[in-house]
Image (cartoon, rainbow, N blue to C red; front, side):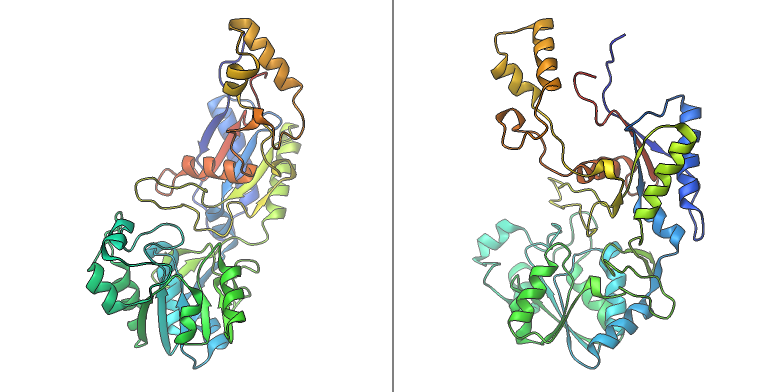
Length: 396
């Protein structure tokens, strides 16, 4: 019988992961058990994705605010620290800020506006227009910001992040001055020593600061890039990708992930005889149209993946073929013509009209987004995702 289902995505439950657990065995056992209980076959080119959270938990990759404070203090000493462009998040940055504050003598906190890097808004863009404020040129003090915009709570969290972040710093008896600007150079009027907390624009920000007189310039990936007194760390990303664990600690992005995905792939090959692709995923890369939040607060969607997930899709647009190349055909004849076209398509469709409208993103970003939406961020309890048919097309 002809197949009538394409891609199938399953969220798999597994035991609660703790430090020291063998994550590779747990993932493989969970996939095999799900296959047995749910009665599905494991095939070549199936995909297993694993959320970064359980990998980091198994690794015990944690750090406390004291570890963060010690690293910050070692880098900045007694100097006033400009903390610029943090995202507005209790989960992602609040605990990091507590550690930064504990290691500093004075902080100038510079927030981007009307929103942070990932779309959390301090003020509505239309309100800026009404007030005649240009966020690309205008620098505002905290008082000026309040005079113009008052107090605004986040759409979803109900938090006024200006007050919240300032209170976290002052909790340690550290003076905190808040300013608002989208120009990295603004902070150099207050201090030459800066910790830039943006994620995807950090390299540009550091370059601008260094080129304009910045002295001690670091970004979040420089903090806990090595272990501090036995803490967890991440050589590539430091504090980037970290999440709140407790009020005094964070779980860092997992480290040394490539051997993990390669071992899982090999173990599944030994047990099933099938070549299954494997990746570790964090945040997906998509934008919420209501809250205007761009999901990607991790430095990358996937820190590690097997070789078969490298690259981008090479697909044609079925509706384009039906409306243009084969507009005079219907029914079975149309189906056969499109199938033949797909079977004979070029290996690289870059620039081809037949490919217009297909998603021009890396496979890992697409699959990571699919996985993140499937597992969710709450209590679904499915940190392993099993995907079938992703590489199939209309002819399969």
